[in-house]
Image 1 (tube, rainbow, N blue to C red):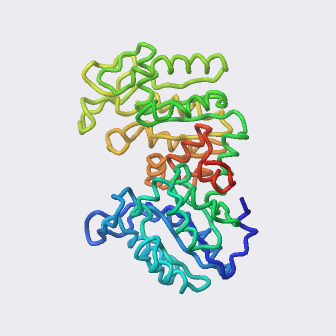
Image 2 (image 1 turned 90 degrees about the vertical axis):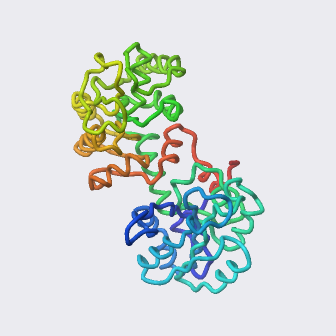
Image 3 (image 1 turned 45 degrees about the vertical axis):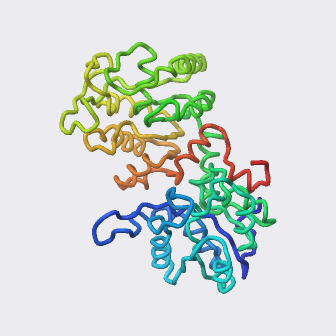
Length: 399
């Protein structure tokens, strides 16, 4: 892998994998236009550096998960429009991501200018990591840059197979920053290290839990994940969602953590209601007094205080996953309390995961965190200790 800052981009066609999978307005006068351009803004330093160096930028990205054929509802046209506004010059949208028309558009590209390829997932070869499709993409550029951290855990053609076609290939500035903070937070953390995991299922984060069991000094577990940990220890959880098939693994994990001296914090109270849509019916109950006819949908106030105190001694904090069903206002306070608690804690604070990121941005507190990762699945893959296929591709390793 080359170092980004040592590459000569002048007059070179640079194929750049970005992540433009951004939300659009679904109603009103702005329907179909970009609603949140945060991911585009995170990518701009890489793009501007290449353009300022005289590079010719060929941008590519997926957008949502369309059928493997053209569908205007999944076009990247809104992104091309927003990019043009942000850069102050027209960024044309190619009619496809490969083919003669695309090649002609790229051939006309001038130094310091950019073109956006149409949604990569309109071609079935993207998700299958097809070598022939990757070769056609690679033929468009002389240099390859991957700056799509949020997609680097996927073995897709624009991330993996394409990299092998380039002698000059590198991580973009965003990806480099993501990997640097991962190393500071998890590979070589300042101790004590506190890891906070939330979200719906233990099964989706079991790999992260197993990997972190050997690294963390304290572990805070919230969200519906905590239900499984409590139920495995005999706590009655009413109608709450949990995963009984994981009880043996959870109990084994708790035993391992206890032997290591890692402190585990679980909820001591919950906000409960008959159902997720039970507006106005939420109330706090202790974990030991869960009624049989309700669901745990958020951590309670005593738990928020417990978790806040647990964070005070940490020198490094990593957080992934909300504390409850925060998309519903009645069950959002546990997550907002956690955001405020981490924001007020000292030490290095790194957060990853789409749901968690959204809550932080909504509260406008991202400036209180050392780093808010742009990737959910990719961040989780790093927590699991898996490494990323996109990084291995840049390094020339087997994917």
